[in-house]
Structures are given as C-alpha cells and as structure tokens.
Amino acid sequence: MRAIAITKPGGPEVLQLVEKQNPEPSRGEVRVRVRATAVNRADLLQRMGAYPAPADSPPDIPGLEIAGEVDSVGPGVERLKVGDRVFGLVGGGGYAEYVVSHERALAKVPDGMSWEAAAAVPEAFITAHDAMTRGEAKTGEVLLVHAVGSGVGTAAVQLGRALGAMVIGTARTADKLERAKDLGLDHGIVPASGKFADMVKQVAPDGAACTLELVGGTYLAEDLRCVTTLGRIVLVGLMAGAMSELDLRLLLNRRASIIGTVLRARPLEEKIMAVRAFESQVVPLLARGAVRPVVDQVFPLADAAKAHERMASNAGFGKIILRCD
Ligand SMILES: NC(=O)c1ccc[n+]([C@@H]2O[C@H](COP(=O)([O-])OP(=O)(O)OC[C@H]3O[C@@H](n4cnc5c(N)ncnc54)[C@H](OP(=O)(O)O)[C@@H]3O)[C@@H](O)[C@H]2O)c1
Image 1 (cartoon, rainbow, N blue to C red):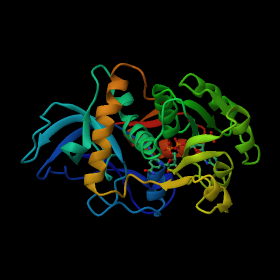
Image 2 (image 1 turned 90 degrees about the vertical axis):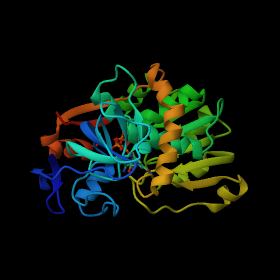
Image 3 (image 1 turned 120 degrees about the vertical axis):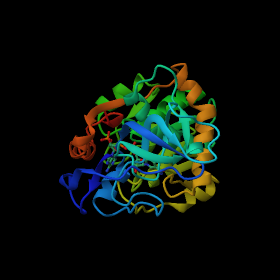
Image 4 (image 1 turned 90 degrees about the horizontal axis):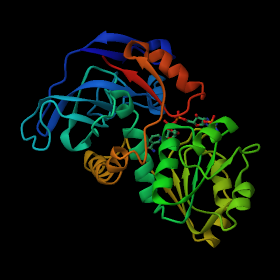
C-alpha cells in the first residue's frame, strides 16, 4: 500500500510517500480501505519526534482518524462486514491506503456524507463530545469554547448549540469568530493580550459553567477568573504551552473542577466507550444535519507536507483533510 512515512524527526519535508505491507486484521479487527484521513496537532508533534506512537500502532505512519470502506474482516468480527462505510479513531497509521482497527472503535458513516466530510468528523467530534460529557455541559448553561476555529472548536460550538447551551467562544481573529456564528456561536471574544475573563462576565455575569480549554498556558488562569460556582474546566489542548500560574483561591472558593483529558493515550476499551457514545449521541445529529463537519482544505495524500504547513500556519478554520484515492 501507499503510505506517508516520517522518514526522520523534522519539518514537513520529512513526510515521504512510501510503499508498505498491507496490515492484516487480528481478532475483532477490520481492515479499512482509507478514502480520507485528517491532520491533527499530534501528527505535527509526532513528525518532530516529540510524540511517539503507542506500542500497538505503526511507529512511522502518522494519522489518528480515518474514513473508508471495510475491506476485510478478522476472526470474531460481528458488527461490520466488507463494504461498510465507516469512520473512527486509530492509534496511528491513518496516512495510508489501508489501516486496521478494532471494529468497535469505528462507527458507520451517515448515508450521503462524502469521504472528505466523514474524515473531518472523528477526532473533532469525539474529542468535543467526550470533553463536554466529562465537563457535564448542560442545556441552558454557559459553555465557553476556546479556539473556536480549530477542528475541535468548530465541533464543540455546534454540539453546544445542539445541546441548547449559551455558547461563548474565543479566537485570535475576528474573522474566525464571525464564521463560528454560523455554527452556533452566541458571543465571540478576541482575547486582549490573552485576557478574556472580564469580557465573558460582561455577557454572562455568573461566568461559564463548562469550559473547553483547547489553548492551555495562561488561558487557564483566565478560565478560573470567569468560572461559575461548581463550574468545570476541561483541559483538552496545550497550544499556548503547558505552564500556567493559577489563583487557587478561585478554584477553592468556587468549588470548581479542572479536568484533564486525552484520547490517544487511552486504553482501547476506553476509546471504544468514547466512540460508542459518539455513535449513539452525535452520529444521529450528523445524519439529520443538526451538526456538520467543517472542512478547511483538502490535499492529496502525497501532499501531506503541505497539509502540515497549513495546520502550523494557524490560518485554518475546521479540519485539514488528506484524500487517499
Ligand atoms: N485531548 C485530546 O484528546 C485532544 C484531541 C484532539 C485535539 N486536542 C488538542 O485540542 C487542540 C485543538 O486541536 P485541533 O486539531 O482542533 O486544532 P487546530 O484545528 O489545528 O486549531 C488550533 C487553533 O488553536 C489556535 N491557537 C494556536 N496557537 C495558539 C496560541 N498560542 N494561543 C491561542 N490560540 C492558539 C489557533 O486559532 P486562532 O489563531 O484562531 O486563535 C489554531 O487555529 C490542540 O491543542 C490539540 O492538541 C486534544
């Protein structure tokens, strides 16, 4: 099969199109003919040598999510059959024509959804849905979403609207906030020198009940300044860094929670649980158009380096897709 390999740690140029052996499905696994995959921040880190693949994934082929058809099934597979259109999470190896996955880590793609749209779904919607579940986001409450133009952000804003939350979001450019309004953003904020808590309190005086923190760094201190009593801050990403100085009195007095989350490092059983929850609660919303994948740009698999450059530029809105014809 054709695949994109990380030939050595480095810049986008180390991503090269190579020939690899087709993987074979083991017990409970299916092999998927990948039609499209999508780029994630973790792929950029892995390419730079800063985020090794889990032990059960190809060490040199990046790619955490796929959409494609089941091409062969291993022993004991019960739910899926050859030809089924599926999407889901993989521990790695998604930048390839074929990948194997446990059948329960995949969900069926809604009828009529293109491969490019389907590949824009799994990481963004499963991460956002799982984080909102952990953060107990509720109807009528204030949901604060950072980096609303990111893949995860565009999914979270829509899931917030579908839930009936009041969605407040941040981005560093007004243009992305404007585009996020079409997805259900009620109030957009461009942080001023990284500060946004006062602006959140102007529109929601009690503060945010659930915050999806995709930026990290100094944003966490601001999240605490605008968290409501018993509020939940779910730390999903560290785009602005891993260090933050916090006023712990705010955490204590508001009896708030900070919850960390990561999908890739979870054991298979827990990933399957996240995918099953996504299948029952989010796929029906996708099927009836209540939420939709947001595609920024589509590149052929061979142009993975260009796709990585696009992500690193922070210019995108939504997901960057690699097509695997
Ligand atoms: N925990 C998990 O399991 C999990 C799963 C998936 C993703 N993630 C994380 O979630 C985050 C979003 O992922 P994604 O793939 O959706 O990202 P993405 O589409 O690449 O978008 C990231 C956005 O973050 C903003 N940003 C970048 N650097 C920033 C900075 N220093 N300060 C403020 N904003 C900054 C940029 O938007 P603006 O320029 O508009 O501000 C950028 O477009 C990443 O940190 C990723 O690692 C975590």
